[in-house]
Every structure is written in C-alpha cells, then in structure tokens.
Length: 388
Image 1 (tube, rainbow, N blue to C red):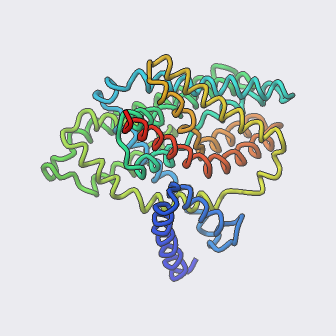
Image 2: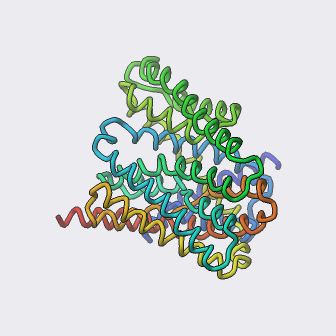
Image 3: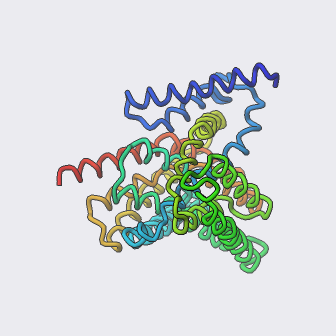
C-alpha cells in the first residue's frame, strides 16, 4: 500500500469514528453498532472501498484493543467491588455460561444435530464481546450496581466459556483425550494468571512513582504492549493476562485510577479501527448458508442467556427487575467465539464447515444486534432506579 493511500485511509476511518459518535447521539444506537455497520458497508461484503491490505492489520489491532479492554475490565475486580457485587458476578456468570451450554446443546440435539457437534456449538455460544460491551457501558454514562456487576461478569465469563469449551471438545471426541485437553486448558488459563501477576505486581508498585501522582501515557501503553506480547510469546491467553494484571494494579497501586484513565484516553482510536475492520471482515453471505438450524441456534442462545441471568440473579438475591436484564445485556458476541470455532474446526475437521458457518453467522447477528440490547438493558435499569 502506498504511503498516501495509507494516510488517506486512516484519516477517513477516524472520521468515520467521529460520524459514528454523532449518529449514535441522534439515534441513541451504540456507536459500536454504527462502526460495525459502516465497516460492513465499506468492506468486502459491501462496497469494497477499503484496501485489501487493511485486513492484515486486523489481528494486531484486535490484540491491542482487546488487551486495553481487558485491563479496564480487570480494574473493575477490586476488593471493594467484589465485596459489594462478588456474589452476583460469580452466580450470574456461571449460571449464564452453564445454561447456555445445557439449553443450546439439548435444543440442537432434539432437532437432529449430532451430539458432539451440538456440544461444540453450545460451548462456542458462551463467548461474549468484552470490547463492545465495555464501550456500550462507557457510552451510556451510567455507573451503578448493575453496570459494575455487568463489568465484573464480562471480565470472567469468557474464562468460564474457555473451560467449558475445553470440556466439550473432549466430550465431542477429541482424539487426544481428557489429559491432553485439560493440560492445555490449565496451561493457557493458569499460565495467563501467573503472567498477569508477574506483570501486575511490579507495575502496581511502580505506577505513579516515576512521576509522583501522574502515571504516564507511555507507562500505560507500555503495559498493554508488554502484556499482549508476552502472552503471545508464552502462548497463553492475552485477555486473562491483561485482566489479571489490571485487577492486581487496581487493588495494590495507590494511583491506579489515573493509570487506567490513561488507557481510556489511548483506547478509543484503536477501538475505532478495531470495530471498523471487524465490520469490514464480517461475511454477510454466511447468513444465507446456515438455514433453519442456524436460526434455531441463535434463538436458543438468546433464551439460554435470559434464563441463565434470571437463575443467577435469583441465586445471588438480586432484585427481579435487574435479573431480567442481565441476559439481554450479555448477548453481544465477537472474536472469542470465532477463535473457539477455529480450534474446534482443526480438532474436528468433519464438522469444520458447519461450525465455522454457524459461528460466523451468529457473530454477524450478535455483533450488530447485541450492543443495542446491552444499551437498552442499561437504560431500562437506570430508569427503574430513578423511579424508585
């Protein structure tokens, strides 16, 4: 790509981000959805206006953007927040993940889907979209018990999903057996936690000390790149690494709020490019290939998350008015699901085409429709609180 083309493309994409903000403020739609739609229109499934070389940027942009999101989500797991909402975070996240696996797998099996394939698709359905949900929460401007709990759930629910996926992969007939997959899952998640601790503890001590009370942007961006780079090097989850480091810094550092504010300041330009390129990479044609089984799969996922939210809220003694909203708020789905699908496709090649088609199609739907559902849930809860 010529330098002039590169600079023009970047300029246009950043202006798209500004346009998404303005359209979102008028229509009350999440800017995430607007960016995805703009990316879809200009990408390969639309007008094909973006240079093909831009697709090569998506991997690195997604890693950097999601690492920033993971740091911010980890920062919500403070002792204070966990003491206030920890029971709800744990109960709702586990209930939503487990109900998704049970309801989706049984529903697909009853209509004739092979048991192993049903289990894999159900496990993939547990994945959410932390970047989209975090941005919707921030855009809403609402900060209360519901949003605090929601951020805590998003911070750990993909971990439950990855554990469930590892188990389902074994049950679906993974040739290497329990020991191999269990060891791999433990190494990925456990190694990520250890790496997050090794990064977070010294970072918590140093933050705010280089320039007293004023953590630097270079410090924040350095932690993001270091965490993602080391996680990729050691082949562990960069999301769990960054969440762990963020939680450690939030609990141990004296000036952690300002440090995370620096990440928030740096995050939006990366997020603009991330969501636009995510939209550009969506394959809308996948919707035509899934048939009625794909439609049922999406309906089952919606039902499972609503019921899981209700059950988890009941266990945690959360008010019923909030319990009804957690399921809809947790509908967004994105890259983690596609990652699971790729792993499953490699392990189970005879089902690879079906797994990828259903996952990509559901990702298109839940990436576009999920953020408005999250925003609606947040606004509904806030309106209820104001009436009380």
